[in-house]
Image (cartoon, rainbow, N blue to C red):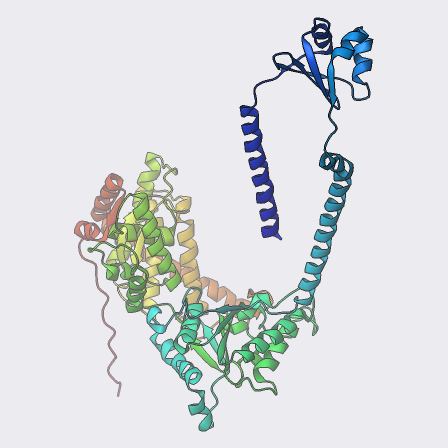
Length: 618
């Protein structure tokens, strides 16, 4: 419809332009004609200046002996002779005039007679045509309402393979069997082997679940249908189930192929939650998925890959053998994987030769692949804004801080007293974290406001760790309270700047007592069970499985851990006041201190002792 209207408008505008050009040309080539009134015409006739008159409806063209033309307008209903007689022109002078009456052409007459009716009929026809077309479009949309909206990815033009997916070697190895089955299914069928119909990709957001699913299709070079779990669910019951049937019918026609359902927890959550009953649209859609994956009709060559970051809320029927019985975990990348991901995202970008991607990878502990891609993109934006031709190391470092902490708030100007207070606060964090053996390395200290923080201390672990010891949590709590202690010891006053630190330290202390069993008083057990409500998608509340007496002990133990951490931070700050003053002076001067300068000011960090097994007791 839109292209048709566009073409019609272009045609009309073209005709108008052509007509205007020809009209302008004809006007320019024809000499100017003077228009006079009836009284002037009568005067010229009485003076015998007019020899010939042409009558064209309400227009008179009067010509003199030298063929000079004058235009005169008259009433359409009044004849020339009546006009001249009424103005007192003698009859003999009227008889001496050469009067010629010109009738309009047949085409003009017909156009005047039928053009209004024709325009009305054409306009009415166009309105009726548009109305009928809209009705037909609504009817066709109603007929296709239950069809799947899955997008088929063409591997010919946009093919992705495992080489382009950095990291996740275990996931690639697990999925390589799926690729081999899609390439040569007969080898498995001859031996009676059944390849899993469903593969569930689990992992935090941004770890590359969609990307690695596309890589499976690219490696096997088969069609790839991509749809989100939320696209099945509609207001009307039965539409989602219809779309599931249509999707699997399309997949069977193009088998072997891959169906990728992103965020399957949108329709695959546990049934029987009391929301909507058994006729809930989401449950009907889930039931149809279960039937299609393990029904009476075998789907040979159709493999369903689903992705979720909430596997704990999925219905058990989805996870049983015959459905999503193969589960692949995509975890956050380690140091080596982060370096590979950064290398992948910088391949097509002009990067300076002195850029050290390993150092960037060391500073991005805990970030996902999507975060790393965002860091490279932000670095490119920084370089462009700074009129650089290549992306340099400083651009990448600034991008890390922007992604983790937020952009610099240059308009957030601190007073001199606030700058000094912020400098001591951040120096307290840094000194305590640097001198306690189990804290992470201090990489940067700044009193430049970012996000909601007036300043920040960036601490990054020297290596990726999967397990954490009790002493690490205790030292981290002391570091969190370092800013609070610095304000109290230096100024004898505390500010609201330590509120977030107190929240974090309290949360760590509570986890030590209630989740990790690291309390000497309460022993090795957990306290409190969190009831997951799948239809809410979050932890609704905590079910207390302990008495009020135990609750008092939990509160007492949390307070004791926080008090011990406070005493540890106080001892470190009191014994290292000169080093803190050096750090504060440098911060007030430069606003930012990097790791090398900080180490020069306060000395090397205290390394944590290695864990050694105790000798066996007799």
